[in-house]
Image (tube, rainbow, N blue to C red; front, side):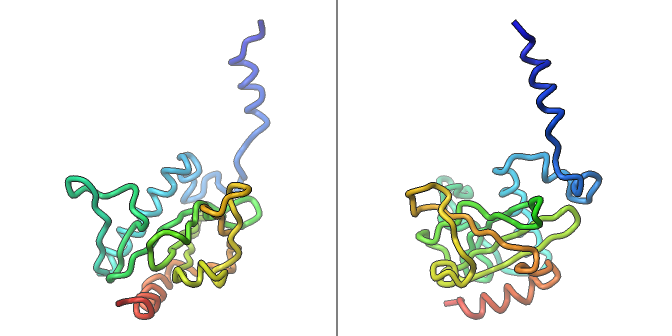
Length: 175
């Protein structure tokens, strides 16, 4: 019987990440699971909001701990946001997965991480539901529960604009 270990090593030699990530400032984000990429994005948004002096809160579940099953991830200045994070693909796009417009949140916040750049987009739930935020593609053929939102680099904003754009969206949506 052939050595399966050697066969897999041979196969793996034919696969590599895009060279644009090698040695880049944010290279390590390509070394973690997609689930952890989402966690990185949420922690980044939390820390950025704290640095900017925004009032933030998180959904809580049992025993006052953060709820991993909440329909929203963070409340910024009283507005609930679903946060999605994606890394730049080989075509210089970002694919934000598992967007659900049937859940209870007020706005969608997407963080795009490139090899050396951070971009973002933020839209009201109404803009997401009506397609104004972009075309949603179902992630599971025949299902209408979870979608993918693909954005080109030019369709997102530099992170330097985060504070003002979030303030504008919060002013529009705040109760």
